[in-house]
Amino acid sequence: MIALPASVEPLFIRAGWHPGVASAVVDGNHHPATDMLREFDGLTVGSDGAGVECARIALKFQPIETLDEQIMAWERTLQTTMVGFAEGGLGYEEFYADEMGRIFAINCIVDGVYLCGFSFGDAVERLLLGRRAMPLLLEGQERVPFYGEDLLRGDPGLSVFLCAGQVKAHRQFER
Image (cartoon, rainbow, N blue to C red; front, side, top):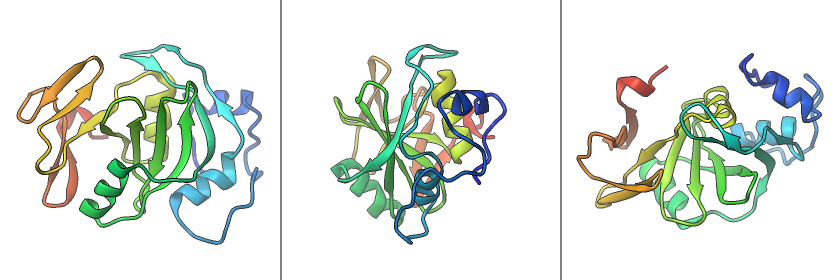
């Protein structure tokens, strides 16, 4: 069973989730996204709307069949495998987990990869309550769109960066 933060567990229960009851059977591949799909596949949790820092995002749990090129670039850079497990309620975002359980998002309208959390619980709390995700830049990438503006490499608003193949966060985003 996947542990959920108390702040968002009622949203999962209202969506039809029953603790300890797997909602789907997926292949035997053991990856954090497999566990998420086993537990939540088919659920739409939360609602889009105003949040704490930005818009809340409803999550539709379902397998994402194809990997976006941006996600493949981050897979290579971080030397991990990412598996898509949900999309945003309006269909503009896709969410992926890596082998360490970190949750990443892409915006399907503009280029950009964002770290939603260092764990599933951190990510769903951030997304369902409307807290900002953390923008990522690859080596050689100079800008990333972020809530209506472009952040350039070196911008103090760029809170997450790549350092020696690892995703690092400034203190304000560490848990």
